[in-house]
Length: 403
Image (cartoon, rainbow, N blue to C red; front, top):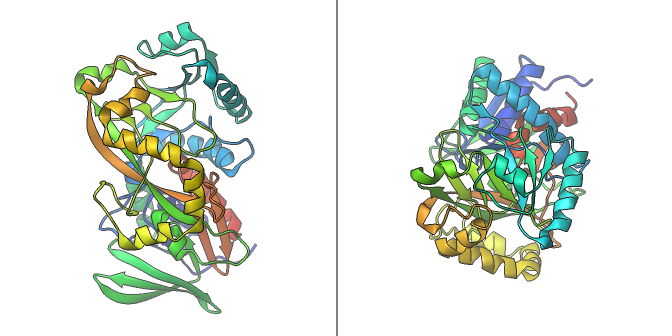
């Protein structure tokens, strides 16, 4: 086994980056670990803007990295929350088919979920759906009783505290501008308080989410996707209607897309949300329609893969934009699953931005994509269920480095 490096820098203070930093200090005590986060706090982007769901592995291609790491990650996360007294509620999920045209996809989903060993998975008919979710309707459903909800920001903060207590350093307001490997290690260009700075490390792990493609070096052999940002908008259900859904109600996803479709999700604070949709964002951290980043927009529009993707999926894009502009259009789809909740019962809520990697040929990268070479490990694509899988991703990353 190779000797542990003297210093490791982790770029990104979201849940994946903090899980990696935690794994390093656990495996190799004495290694100087530094987490670098450009925002003034941790978990400010994908970690802090997701739906809080702990996935059980229903959706992922058997044998894929997602399937493997989600299965292990859920168990690790459940135990982590119990150990640290963090919220973790197994409220369960229904994935519902509402018409005959969805049944082929539903059957394929059931086969995948079964192959992935989703615990307690059951197929339900109309009557069974009503027993689990009295206000949901459909022809058939898959019930995943161990799908859970949690507070990922609280988990990330707890991981950061563990890193600090083990002698690691967690730096906020520290932007990494470039990463260059050389014979002596890795040089990181930094910007702190607007001033340039420099840090050297023996190894760097890039968990930069929405900016992963800008910082991860081109290793020459691995395909290098571009991050295309998709904004996911949520609707909040009025308090009087929140009890109409006990846990979660999801549609059968379209296998052409890595998105799961608009769904009803309970939060650990007791609130109920509908969403998210998936509309192209004009800024990588653009949580509002009016947010525009010229560099981000340029990078999207100059990527050949974007235009190939758009040419294949523009009709779906129009549908998503229509739902974004109109609450009635948004609920027209969602109310097929829970008709009792209508546009009169919801208001616009928050939004998140998904870092969706897109290959040059226009393919939406579905699986986790992690590469390492020349002292730099790059998490190039880690969308949902990355939060669920974070502790398992950390194990995988550290294993790949060879520590």
